[in-house]
Image (cartoon, rainbow, N blue to C red):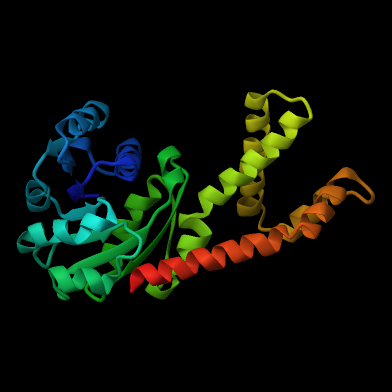
Length: 268
């Protein structure tokens, strides 16, 4: 990629993205610019990734072709206001914050600017992220592909319409928390049966990771894969029956519905 990439903010998600870009050699590290108000944080980022750093976000915008705004949602508007005069019609602005619609960004920097709204998730920290991308009318398909290549460098990504972002947050953005709870519950049961906690976490985590990989790579319906494990009158079907009795599916669906509803409220 013959582009310079800038990051305003250097929190966990920004560092995950920078790590993916550097590791994949999408662009050389000297073509990545990062700003943060905390110099100590920038020193650590520079030491780890050998990228250009600055405490001035305007410096990053000025020097970058693609600018990823990786700050907390509560300061998004303030940050964009402070740099909007430097955003010309060639720069691509990438957002990663929940509740920040394309329209809300256009209201600040102008509806003639190039904007890609994205929603990555925290497994990006281990190069297994899942991200959604949607563009405004000023982004060409080639430009969208360029941005997509950034997100593919630390996991997988899909292009969606903006009205699907709330669903994405429910099924992907917030979903790691549900999965962590499931792993924790399985591990607790194993510990109750006498297994050490480190082993219990390892068994439960690998089971989840391996099962997810089977869904992605086999092309089989999750229900079919479940049936393959459930021998007649066996241990697995007994566990599945209990999960059904206790309402696992209903709890997950209801939790996601509430997550999506909250996301919709944040967009208003």
